Length: 429
RNA sequence: GGAGAGGUGGCAGAGUGGCCGAUUGCGUCACCUUGCUAAGGUGAUGUACCGGUAACGGUACCGGGGGUUCGAAUCCCCCCCUCUCCGCCA
Image (cartoon, rainbow, N blue to C red):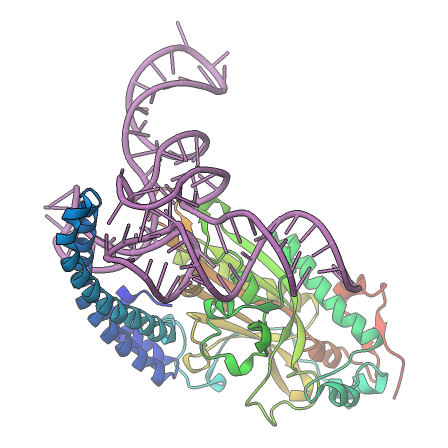
C-alpha cells in the first residue's frame, strides 16, 4: 500500500508506476482513490464538528438534573440523526478508499528496466560455464524415470496433473538441497522458522498477494484459510500489527515450507517434468528492517548473493536478471531473478526471485518500529528471496551433472548430506 | 466438539453508562539531587486522521463488526483470539 499523501502530492508518479508495470487498470485506481479521498476530506471536518457538539452537550447533560435534561434531548436527538447519516457515508468512503488504495501497485524503482514481460528482463551478470556434453544429454525427467526416481503417472492418477512423486536418491537429494539451504542461511545469522502453511486472508492481503492472486491460491473455504504459495506470506506477516523496538531490527528469517500454487492459466506451459508443479518445498529468506532505502539496497544485494553462493556451491551456471516493469508484481519496487542453466530447455530457467518492497507490505501489515531517536513510529522495509526451491532446482542439478551412463555426479557441497556419495544412481544406458 | 474465564496504551494491570483517551506500575525521555556501583526527586511520554507555518485545537481508537442510548471501554448480539477443565486425536 502506498501512502495516500504520496498520491495527493504526486498522483502521476503512481499512475506512471502502474503503467510501467503494465497494469493500466491499476492506474485507474489512483484516480478513484483520490476522488474518494477528496470527498472524505470534505466530509470529515463537518462530521468532526457535529461530534464535538454532541460530545460537549452530552458532557454537560451528565451534570444536569433529570428535569433540565429534557430541554437538551430534542437537539441531541436531531444531532444524532445527522451524525448517523454522515457516519454511514464515512464508512462507505473509508471502505472504498481502502479498496482502491490496496489496488494501487508499489512504485517501481527508476532502475527497473522498461519492458512488457519476462522476455525483456535485463541480464546483469553470468556465472559459470554452460556445459558441453560429449554425449546425448537427457532431460531431467528422462533421467529420473530411468532411475526410478520420479513417477508422474501415478502422481497424476491420485492428485491430478502437475504433480510428482519422488523416490529413492532423488527424494534424498531433494531433502539435501533444502537442508543445505537452511544451514547456509543459519550460518549467516538468519533465524530458522517453521511457519504455518494455512493462513488467513489478512496475511495474504498484507503481503500483497490479495487482491489479485486469488486464482493462484488454494483456499479452504470452510475455514477461511489459504494454503501459502511461499513462506514469504507467514514470515513477512510474523510481526504484523506490532510496534517493534528499533534495536531488534533487522530481523532476518529463513523458513522452509511446502508451497502450493494452482497454476491457473498456465495450461500447456511447462507441462513436462518438475518445472511447474502445484506443490513444492522452498527455503525462503526474509528481512525486516528500518525504513532506510540504502539499507534496503544493501540487504537486496546480500540476499541475492546468498542465493548465488548456493548455486556456486552446487556448481551450477546461472545468470542474474533485473526484472522489467511488465514482469514485476504489484507489491515489488524492484526484483532480481536468478535463472539457472537448464540444458533440456537450452536456456536459463528461473530458480530464484529476490524482491525489495520498501514499506509497501509493512503498511498493509501494520508492521512498524519505534525509532531510537524518539521520532514517530515508522513502517518497516521488507525484502525476500528464494534460497532454494525444490524440486525445480533438481532440474539443473540432474541435467548439468548427468553422466553418459545416466548416473548423476553430486557436487562436493552436497555430499555430506548424502552419506558422502559422489554419484547417485546406477548406470542405465 | 462441550463448559467456563479473559482480550484495555511500548509492556504489566485498574476501570461496569456521562466527571475516562482512560488510575497506577514498569519502560522511555528531560531536568534535579547524590562525589563509586546503585539509588532518589520532579516533569514529560499512545496511535491515526482533520485544521494550522507553528504553538495548539478538533475527532476517532479500550480484540473486530453490528446494536441499544441524548451519551458506551462499561449494556446486548455475532465473529476472532488467548487461557483453564472435559472429550477427541498426530
